[in-house]
Image (cartoon, one colour):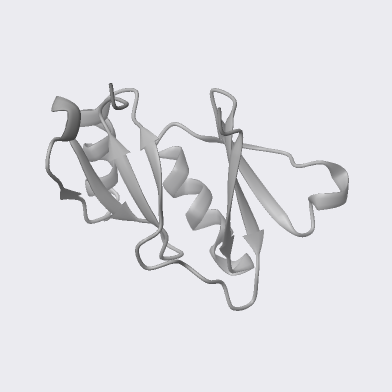
Length: 116
């Protein structure tokens, strides 16, 4: 099990990043006291995304975070209605999936179901 991933974002973009992850069912949670000034965290069902504050964040062009959406069609609709482009991809393992990009430029694969 992967507990968390960490991605970099500008402090000015944190609220937009948190709002993006909320569209996928993640809620903001408080990091430990010693990390409040350097990161924001979001969590869903025990999995976290840590948003690390950086002046010049790096977003890998092909690297990505894959998230299984609890209600795939509704999640895709929420993303598109919020202005996020969503690109459907080949249905591997018989399940719908596609890619979008966070406000900070990070690729996110949204999946209807996990493989196998």
